[in-house]
Length: 115
Length: 110
Image 1 (spheres, each protein chain N blue to C red):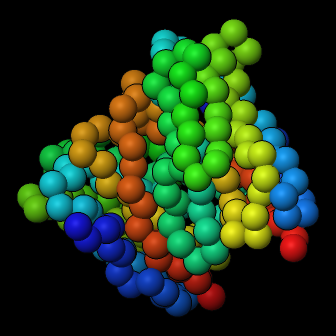
Image 2: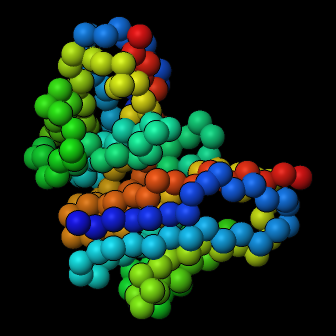
């Protein structure tokens, strides 16, 4: 069974631009979560989608948004990029809601560098 | 809200040494507890889990016991290998989502 795939793997943008990252979950998984990983802040939860609905949202500004399609694929968008948005963005999928019973399967991440 | 506190790293050990990485949590209700591992250049992968008090999760020689009385889920391994070098994350699965600790970077020297 194919794992979680994320595209692109690496991205370089300049301040003020916007970016869209893509995530394809494991086949049959309906929940997709996004995380931002930085050396200073560690792993921070961005949002979770289940059946095309945002179920949970972390404490990030409105510049960070996401969506999920009917095939469970998900995209996240960051507008008006700032230097501090440079990070590894991880996507994780699970069969159901993450949480008590929700083992998550992670993709390799997209490394975003903002210059 | 729910939270997880891990021992700060980095941790450096010699091969075949005993490993303990401490993890304590704060949660309402009865969460599940997880340890995830991240090898260089990869995403996180589940190492082990426990879903109720006194459960012991184990995998690849690693163990952790869900201790409700001390709200802890410490990761242990009797004899580490160079290939265990990675970042380890303790996580709590509550009603709404997974909450991760800050991660502990482990380096094993031959």
